[in-house]
Image (cartoon, rainbow over all chains, first blue to last red; front, side, top):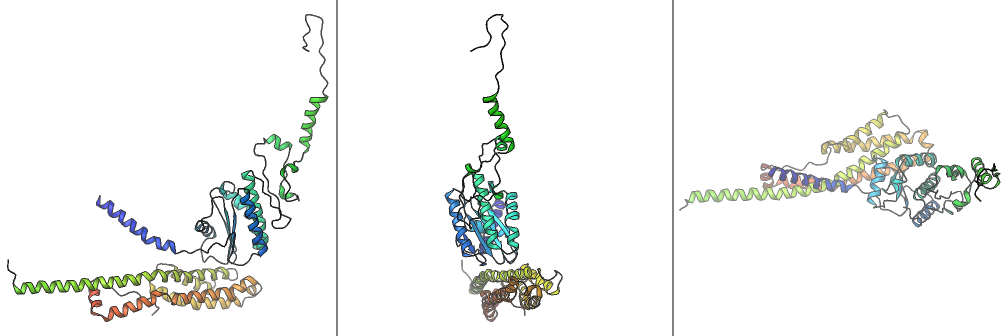
Length: 248
Length: 178
């Protein structure tokens, strides 16, 4: 028993000694949606990010935080982003993007609720296709604009809500809307939903105005209408034996 | 029960010696603990030196090969400062880092690739030298150095310090290359 107590006391002592060391790491204070410590983002980008986050909040989504730093002094970007997310006590549906300018690295930190929509693969895909190229070309405003809109769109689609992004990051911003979650694959085939990225739609257009028919849809609808209205009814022949079989 | 005068005197002397020894031990142990408390501050300052070295090496790796002599030296200094070496060895590495980093920055500034890159040119000519200088200044001003020096001066010069030394308390290790 005494040994157990001694071991427990030793463990407590070790934990006590480790605590000050862990508390040493200092993180910058949050300056709101954008904490641009490297000073690489324009004022308009910061304003647009704040506007986007407000729209996301209004749509019951989390916020999109952006942090820039010149260097991390040997700390891994993903580890730092995660630690910053925790240190700032961000919500579980929030997303934090860390850009390390001097190290040419970046990382996402995503809350537990937002992870349902932004899995590790989705995050990698978003960063690779909507961020990396512009970031490495040092178009930091462009990189943040595209990634934040795509991320917001992904979160909105997953949550099944409509996110109106009009007026954010200029007019080229796509509108992120919810796809019908209950539609079967047959209906989806009939009413093919085009990818918003490929279309130059007005940013605030709603989903219902973007339903388009493909040739299969036309064919199936044509057959349905034909069978309902134009199909000739089969003649029923009576041969004179017994009562008429045809009901009227 | 009657106590002989000699025995009583002996007990008194033993008690006196014990109380002096115990007092010296407790007093110097407390002083030493105060010095140790400032060590955390020195570690934090040394961490800024390590971070500066990492940042410098990040920029340097974009323009020079990994086996370049200056890069190798800065890496070595950084590893010593980051590792679990003695304070004296760390102090030497800290001094060497100032010289090695300056040499590496000079070499980088002379490179055409750095001159053609506005971002890295800013890092090499402004940002990193400033960071290195600040971290060096902070480390030099760390309270631990002063506290350890003052502790050792009075510890070595007093009888109670000599007694405490007999009871197992040693001088504080100074953060000095000498």
